[in-house]
Length: 90
Image (tube, rainbow, N blue to C red; front, side, top):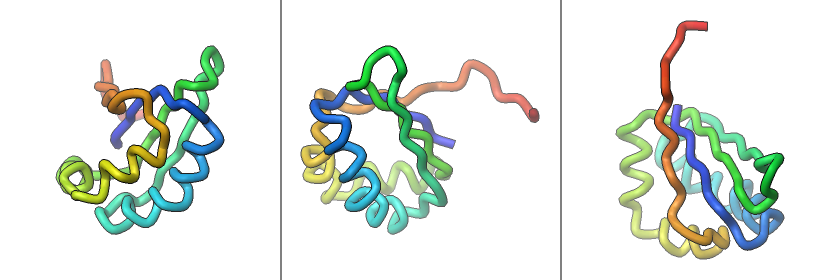
């Protein structure tokens, strides 16, 4: 699982690109599922949760098409990867 947090200029635009343009590119790189969450304390901060292996995620980040997609998303800066504090079985 990969979790990222990003600030965006327009949450609706982000979600539109995330669920249309982004899904194609994520599938191409082995992503099995993705969810986006709007932070309840800041509507311009979105959390993305991906069912993705690290190797496939790294390939996605290296794809030359990603910077253009990131611009379409309206990111205010690069997404920050959230590192789990603990991993539990349940």
